[in-house]
Amino acid sequence: MAADGTEHAGSTGDGTVGKALDVLDLVAQYGRPVRFSDLLEHRLFPKATLYRFLQTLTNQGMLSHDVQTGHYALGVRLVRLAHAAWAQSSLAPIARPFLDELAAATGETIHLAQMDQAQVLYVDKRNATRPVEMFSQAGKVGPAYCTGVGKAMLAHMPEAALERALQRQSFHPFTPQTLSTRTALRAELVTIRACGYAFDREEHEQGIICVAVPILSRSGQVMGAMSVTSTTQRTTLDALEQQVGRIKDCAAAISAAAESWRFPEQNQRGE
Amino acid sequence: MAADGTEHAGSTGDGTVGKALDVLDLVAQYGRPVRFSDLLEHRLFPKATLYRFLQTLTNQGMLSHDVQTGHYALGVRLVRLAHAAWAQSSLAPIARPFLDELAAATGETIHLAQMDQAQVLYVDKRNATRPVEMFSQAGKVGPAYCTGVGKAMLAHMPEAALERALQRQSFHPFTPQTLSTRTALRAELVTIRACGYAFDREEHEQGIICVAVPILSRSGQVMGAMSVTSTTQRTTLDALEQQVGRIKDCAAAISAAAESWRFPEQNQRGE
DNA sequence: CCTAGTGGTTCCATTATGTGAAACTAAGTC
DNA sequence: GACTTAGTTTCACATAATGGAACCACTAGG
Image (tube, rainbow over all chains, first blue to last red; front, side):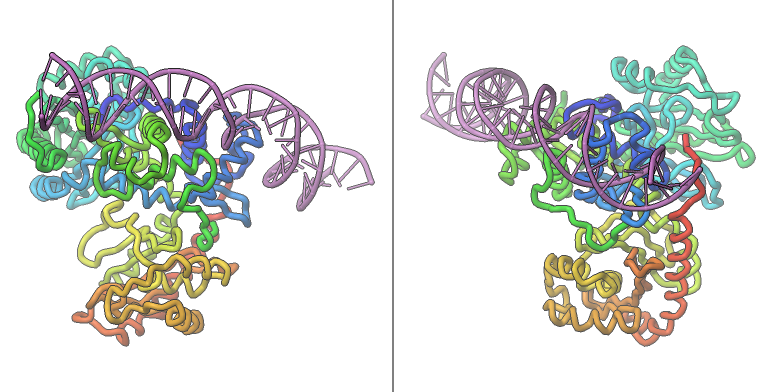
């Protein structure tokens, strides 16, 4: 699972396969179907090469190609694969009952997230009874340095992985409250590590606050994080802090469930 | 979009990329993390080759590798990609409001599906009582020859693509009502094509019935299908048939929305 | 302590594969 | 009818994939 140091070059890394996947990412980047020449403009590959990749990927069902308009889009095969990925690799299916319970208990929005390429990937979500429209859904990604779940995970990562992850944060100041320097973030991570939970003080979106806790394996590895999110109109950080105990319990329960799921019947050996 | 004849060899097709994706599929096949030697047993590739693929894919975040146990699983990068795929390539985001409306009006379960490799891929669902949960349901695949949506789509495919798709149906008799021969199915497809909607008469699951209509582009291409599903205890085929008009309207509305979506206003770059 | 067996990783000569400049075709412009 | 623009095909060349075999790290069993 290695929720921490997932390497993955990003820029053209290993071999032909890596390049092909870069093309896939490129298509994903656009939120809409793209033309050949749109992709070509990125100067990632010469014409012929790009063309061949698009053909191969289309052939494989990873892309779809509308012959009418000549547009390429991500293929449905990905949806199928992702369903399997979601089911077998993410915490979501394990965490589901616990999230349900927490959602019912708190009545707020719950997020479950994991790290992916130094970003936060939301893998599940429970809507508040009074739903709030906001940036998140399963599969969506968000920044790590200015979200509760992101900071909770960063705070509990080993130094090497953390450094690599920090390198890749944009520190874009979404709001006046956004921590926009490496040092400011590092300082807060120390506090978070100490107390075991993280706040989002409207750092990503004005009016949106949350409290998040990491989900750690028995060996202390970061597996993911979960948060209870609300708005400044509805509640306060102090009120959210009250919930921390309950949330931590929930995280612990998920961790335990994950642990036993990973070693179904093996004799467990302490490190 | 070519919702019909999505080729995609399945067995090792084009180049290195195709092979790598086969490995991915292989991992997906197991519902659980797998060891190197499990995969090796399939004799798809020699040891060294498989090893290299696994390394590359892990590197790329398409697989995750638990160093403790040596298990491989599908990587979270897939979930991210799929989110994009779901959003940009499936009918789901376009159809969403229409499905909501239909769900409210009928009070029954609604499915939205597309073809993927001669199988039915569910891309969205409305559960009368419960709210939507994305990947938990969306992303599942099912057989084409014995589901309402499957038959609705098959019935409206061009002959060449249909033949190819039929070739790949298993015709496993799930229930006594399952159409279990090519000819029986072909006969029904003619009827379906004529009237524009398809029934599932407990052909896939005992007690589960549905009525489905295809979603066709203006040019008559199959883009997907949708169905209203219920149980024999709750309703009858005749009662479902009453709804056909409404469902067809809904399908037409989705088609129209999709059409205008495909030729969007240019120039808008996210992030 | 040695030997055999299992499961995973690395080497490296061979050659298949991918590469990309350039030529080509098909549609639009002006 | 000359002139872009957008996509497709070719082909000599070199890179990158291949896979048999050797190699390690363990574990078991004699």
